[in-house]
Length: 174
Image (tube, rainbow, N blue to C red):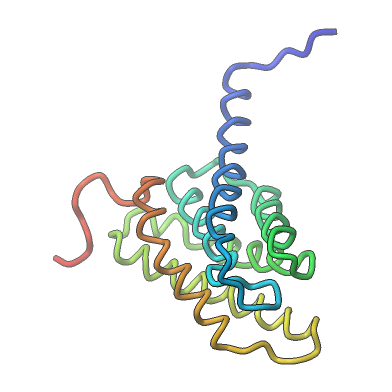
């Protein structure tokens, strides 16, 4: 029996697969040996969350909950942390983003960047708290803030690559 797939279904499946490929590329690039311990290298999974954030804003229907969960599981597996912590953090942050996504479509790029900072702070704080509970001790907040800052620095190039910036040069400065 031959499986019949419509071209639009095939293209949608390929776009969803591209999300995971982009997350994997960011994870590989962030694997530069600058580890900070506890499964949190210098960049951490915030680069992968940046891909999920930007992709969900630039391509509205391509991000499903299972893709966000899979991106989080990939981060957990890649960094050797407790399985499921980043997946849960990504899902909670994605739920916040999904609630604000329609209003963010009309906002200038600077406001979208501020939204990314706030939503990624939620994901980072949740992951930090859950990881601290898992290990039974507080993880150094300096390491967490360093990974958070690296994730914010990645927002600019990833948002430019994935087309989050508006077509016109509206930066929100005037």
